[in-house]
Length: 258
Image 1 (cartoon, rainbow, N blue to C red):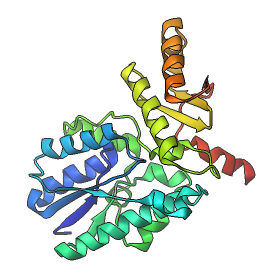
Image 2 (cartoon, rainbow, N blue to C red):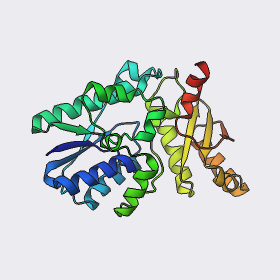
Image 3 (cartoon, rainbow, N blue to C red):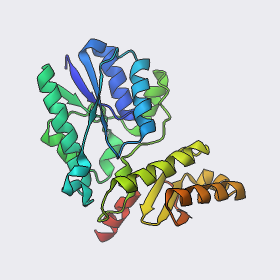
Image 4 (cartoon, rainbow, N blue to C red):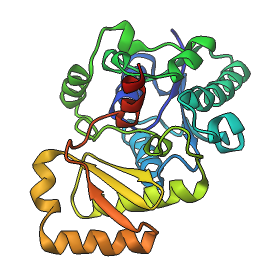
């Protein structure tokens, strides 16, 4: 590919793509671009910047501002929401790549992603974005194994997703809701919980955790702390989802309709 632009979210998938691109092409031929918006947690942005320094990208990392919330099609939160987010991102990446004379734009989509409902993939096709992990036939398990062998600290990082994915389809995405979700999830991580989601149902927070972490969550002291903090954030009720964490749980309503 000679020179590439990598859509870098800071997650393990795009981190592996970025690391291999730097190893193969050299840092001067790789440009990482991270999109910053209300749907992207501050902690993740800081971690993304730190990672690019650790792999020796030598400053070839752009943080750009995306304004997907200004798009009514995105804010309306239909099942196609992700398309409009990715469409804006790839539009900006295409402009950047053309300005710099770089032919290829890469993302971190992998084989494991192909089994879920992902309208953002249509945006990738529209803009000619390539997915090296899919082309190489790599699933999530293999990606983590390779990342560990390469010494990447993010190899076991919990799966990421846009904060808007915590809001049920049909309910408007707003800055206020995203802020509440970010605060709630950040607090749970500060208590030591790892793979988690806080699903936003207006005044109800539905917490998804790995079932192995249920006992810790249900300890009296932890329950009291979480309830108190979530009330401060603005939730009236806090519930624990008995099915536990699962990626794309908001898509379950779509499968039910089918």
